[in-house]
Image 1 (spheres, rainbow, N blue to C red):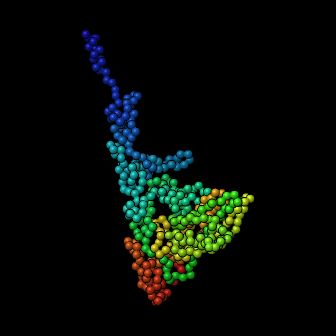
Image 2 (image 1 turned 45 degrees about the vertical axis):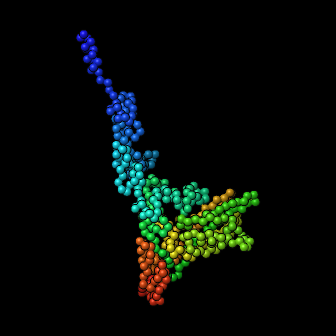
Image 3 (image 1 turned 30 degrees about the vertical axis):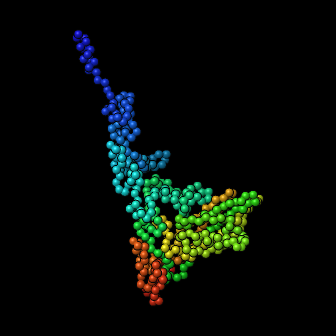
Length: 376
């Protein structure tokens, strides 16, 4: 009897171990009574707390790896937000947003006059596939900007304003622009377009040329504008190129002249015609077809120009080079002779000037004491 009692007491004294809280219903009890937690529930040993989404950290410790300094590693809530362990969601302080606080908000949601884009999206939207350069990988309309892929490519954002609006939040409405009616001795901005078009006795050599300027583009057949002779009543190559460039919404008028022409033989039966055109922009639109990305004051940078080609064979190319950007006519708000009200997009002209862009002299009384007659 005593032996049986001792055995019973010994049996009752045995305590079988188990996983804490039975893994809270979010995992399995494994070897050595350690919980194997389900995904996103592995913060606490008993699987009672959730993890939050991770993103590229806005700030973190740096370290060396493969002789490179590494930073901005992945971190919960991008190391800027607070994780709610019960729901597994990030609470992001302004101006951070996204499931992991991984992205910046655009100011004022671009004021309903544009859209919010990451830096990568912005570079893709305004990049074209030019020639054989692998860096020009985008297909959107615009100038030759490289695709941006730095650490904040998908984190930092910017507003891409609608045409006619500008400012960080696209809240500013552009006023009419024009040339200062008083300044003199100025030239129109000019650039050259070098076009090389292939011809072949065995292939049609189809090649389209796409000319870009300031976020706008136009497509034409380069063979037509490199032709040495044109049978009437077909437009001349000069006229074809002029009409194509004038069709862009951000250019009012141009003059086009041929600066050189010739041919190159690549192989028997395969030649290429090379033609260089000089283009002078003689007038800009009074209402600017510009935004916060593409704008200029009369001297557009080379980055705003571009052209690309597609061909069935060798010898197809196109390039643009700016040749005259100094001492050019102004293209400024209210022609520098008025104040722009960016809330309405209207000019308040100074005394003696009138017109929507203040480019018309309304008085014959003009003296050097009150009017700047320089070309600056």
